[in-house]
Image (cartoon, protein in one colour):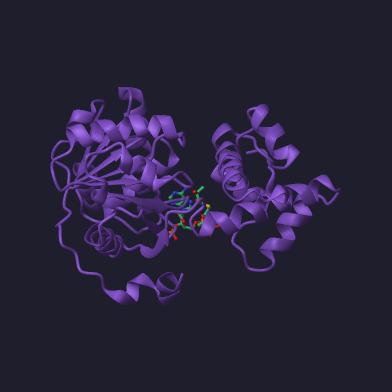
Length: 296
Ligand code: 3HC
């Protein structure tokens, strides 16, 4: 914790592996944002989806954000083309054979991640860094299915990835300090703020944030209107109220994180609120489905 509060940015970590070409696996909100961040920072990015349609959706999201930047006068057409030219869509993981780092942002399910890490171990070149943006699963478990646990690390981006500066850089016991330094340097190079964390459920931010969000749902269940809770918390200078934030993160993701926390730490008071479970069961996952706690 001391290391984290000192601010990794101030430590000026030394990069030992040059990281030029980046691979991203996944086609959801986080994957799309991470592709955008690296490409805007000048990296060639190969991104892998399960189908052409899913990969095309990533490309479309990045282009939409670039168009928004053009509309705001923050980017010109040449700048947009330069970013687009750095993108390569793929549907086969074999396309990751020559990347210097892979950041995976696939489903938050350990078995699915382990299957991916076994494949990455087979496909990626020696020395490539294998990073996961898991929000609460164990980095050590992902590392354990590879022949190169020293090169496996957590790189936890926040939603929306193009905007949020924080990246939690999560070292498992077996992660090499050199790989952690390389990833911290990479974060600085792409304009992010790295904070080092240990491999514990929820790392730093989610271990504090999600019990708060869950408590907000319980407060609402006890009769306080959602709008009043959002309004009050925003007036404390938080950028979003808890229900707005739950809808941005996704209620399914929030439920998964809260479940992991309660399993890891056993605090009964952290049991996912009934209404959080209910909205997920109803498919009201948040902005991505057009309805969550609020309607969009
Ligand atoms: N993708 C890309 N860019 C986006 C974006 C998105 N989804 N949403 C907003 N932006 C950009 C806008 O284009 C704008 O860029 P500009 O300054 O260059 O013009 C900038 O962000 C600000 O956007 P707006 O003015 O439209 O809106 P706000 O000022 O209300 O900011 C916000 C939006 C940045 C999302 C802000 O409300 C915020 O910070 N919310 C809190 C987000 C948060 O806490 N995230 C962490 C969640 S926990 C998590 O991710 C952990 C994981 O494990 C689940």
